[in-house]
Length: 221
Image 1 (cartoon, helix red, strand yellow):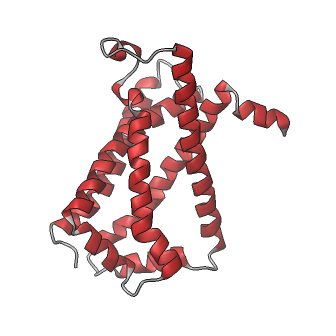
Image 2 (cartoon, helix red, strand yellow; image 1 turned 120 degrees about the vertical axis):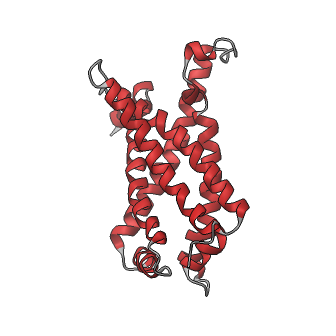
């Protein structure tokens, strides 16, 4: 066990863990999006409520296990990202100068910590608005009604869409970087991975962003 701790705390170990946790969280986004798209079913939230109630059932042990795993992986991903950034900056001893930034790194890689920080703030607000109230305090209105009310607020919807734009930037670099870290990059598949990563980031985040706009435009029942 000691060797494993030493490995994940090593330079390459941190990067591999960062890649694996990032890819796992990306897979979760697909599952989460599938459930959230039920908000657009046009049935007054019936299908979405069935989904939300299923996810909230106290006896749903598999879902509870996945939620705990997601929380642990998310926190570890954040801490690991901060540590890697700190180590890289110390190794360079100085930050990139503005004139040299584009020569040393991409736009996306330079703002991973900043975009990740804003996304984390969004996540806290999002969980505070929906997850915690409906998992622990059980308010009288339905989850669908709460979502509809929140997204009809231009400020909340605007922040949600802004967060999705940043998430797209984060995913675009993160997915490509993860495959590179795992050694799945070469001259033949690099263009495919780059295009796939970009397409994934755009499709996932655009689909998420459509949901608040749907309610903001008064299309929700």
